[in-house]
Length: 149
Image (cartoon, rainbow, N blue to C red; front, side, top):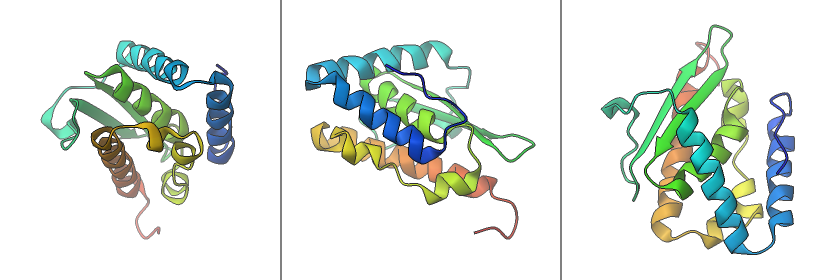
């Protein structure tokens, strides 16, 4: 699969993910891709599995850490005990990490619909993914400069 350039805007990044999924074909291949992404995310996790970073309401155990650097750019890190959930998290981070909070708030994850991911996830995983997106949005709102949005 192609690597997403951190200099791509969110729309182009999401389009690249959609194209990648279209090239995968069957859902067994797509789930395999998510598992591969999940393995890579788990190996790169440097955050803490603390209560503050725990995302409750998911079927799997999920931790999401965020930082807003001195330039006002968001950075996400996370892990899960489910490789599919970690793969979904990796896609979300690919789209939303290293972005300004305004970009994150203004761009919904259209790739989830256009790839068919939401339609092919269990209800519990889809709910967990929604909670993950809400957490990312909350982090972005907390990182906004005073008086913005």
